[in-house]
Image (cartoon, rainbow, N blue to C red):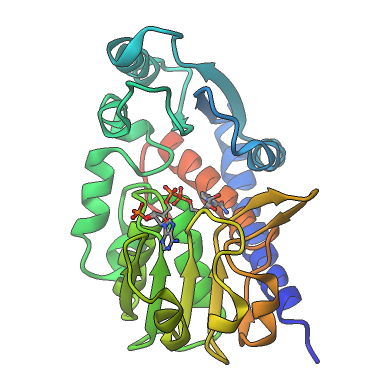
Length: 292
Ligand SMILES: NC(=O)c1ccc[n+]([C@@H]2O[C@H](COP(=O)([O-])OP(=O)(O)OC[C@H]3O[C@@H](n4cnc5c(N)ncnc54)[C@H](OP(=O)(O)O)[C@@H]3O)[C@@H](O)[C@H]2O)c1
């Protein structure tokens, strides 16, 4: 029997590689490498992701520099810092790591970032453009960056070989950066989307009905294999260190029931990195666009 997890891994790898190869060429054509500033907050939850991001950026010809938010300066100093970074001609794009220190409100901070330097597509202007889109084509051809994890989820759903039109999709998690935009993108791809969250009643029942299940919950293996509909497509964005290994939001044994399932690690993560770097290149070229 074909190992479904290996199929998911190979698909993600191939899609990420194709994108990274294009980025490397695009970055090489520019002469100067595009520079991504990563604004670090106090939390270090994404350490494994940061290491793989830096490796991929190096290979793709993009330079990453680290910038710490001013310590103890509060929201006003953080906003000033973001405006200064936005105005720095040596910085092509900015990524803001979360969680932020207490007292710094994320949307306010993202508002201080120039949308033309917004690597994550989460500044209010770019986010508004995304949610104004009524067709997938507008995202594909649009001149704005799209949140990379959500875009990777949609791209994997699109590439895994199922017809998305009319498909019953469940997205578990409604964060601004992942769940909400993923649900919107899947709806642009004509799936019929339910968006679940921590107040949702009877999640197991909803999962058991979902032909496409997207997990972006942030809790290790909280979606049980037994809840997954037989033959479903499962896309797991979760990544957690547990007992010396990485696990997702869905129990790995769900692959036995699924028709297709992304692995953790090696599924959504590498493609997210590639889409992030693609945003950086597009911004450096002076135009956005998920696939430009
Ligand atoms: N692979 C990648 O590249 C990548 C990138 C980014 C994030 N991630 C991963 O994706 C996952 C989600 O990240 P995030 O930033 O979106 O997390 P987040 O901001 O913490 O959001 C989690 C969401 O899950 C919902 N939720 C929490 N417990 C739930 C439950 N028991 N049942 C149903 N819904 C529940 C929350 O509901 P409420 O809104 O009601 O609180 C919230 O909407 C994490 O595992 C993270 O590590 C992966």
